[in-house]
Image (cartoon, rainbow, N blue to C red; front, side):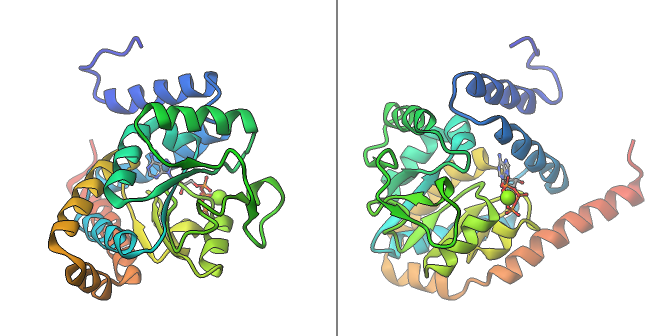
Length: 253
Ligand code: ATP
Ligand code: MG
C-alpha cells in the first residue's frame, strides 16, 4: 500500500487495495470490484456517513432477525473481503448461522470464504455442501443449504443481486439487505433496506442487536410494527436529493 494516510480518499483507496488483493487471493470475484464501484458512487451522494434512515432500518432489521426462528446471514466475496470479522460478531449477537452464497460461484471460492469466516470467529458456517435450490434462479446461482438461507425464515443478504433477493421474498422469507443504492432491485424488493456502506453498517447492527436483546421481545415486536420500508427508502432518496440541491446552491468547488 503506497497511499499516505493523509490522502483525502485514504479509506476508499485502502478499501480498493484490499478488494484487489482479495481478488488475487481468490476470495472476491473481478465482477465484485465493479459492484463496489457502483456502491461508492452512491456513498458520495449520502455524504459517506450513516444517516438516520439507515439507523432506523438497522434497528428494524435486527428486530426481525432476533424474532426469527432461523435467522441466517449471507456472505459473498465482497462481504468476506470487507467485513468477515464484523459479520461473524453480528451472527453471534443474533444467534444466526452464516451461509457462503456466491453469485459467481466456484467451489474453491466458497471454501476460501468459509475458512476466512471461521478464522474470523464464525461458529456456524454453511454453503460448502449445498443441498437445496432457490426456486426460479438459474443453475449455480440457486445453490443453497437447508441449514442456511434455504431453511431460514429471515435473512440478511447485503450487496445481493436483485433476482435472488426477489426470489427469496417470493419464498416467503423476511429479507433484510444492506445496499448503498436505494434504486437497486434488491433495495426495492427487501422488506428492510439499510441504505449505508457495509463496513459502517455491520458493526453498528451488532450494537443495535445487543440493545434490542436487552429491551426484550415486546420492544422488538413494536420496532417491527412501526417500520415502513417504503418511507425509509423515500427518506434516503430525499436525503440524497436535498444534499445535491444544497451543494448546487452553495457551489461545488
Ligand atoms: P440489483 O441487482 O439489485 O438491481 P445491481 O445489479 O446494481 O443491483 P449487484 O451487483 O447485483 O448490483 O449488487 C451489488 C449492490 O451492492 C449494488 O447495489 C451496490 O450499490 C451495492 N454495494 C456495493 N458495495 C457496497 C458496500 N461496500 N456497501 C453497501 N452497498 C454496496
Ligand atoms: Mg444485480
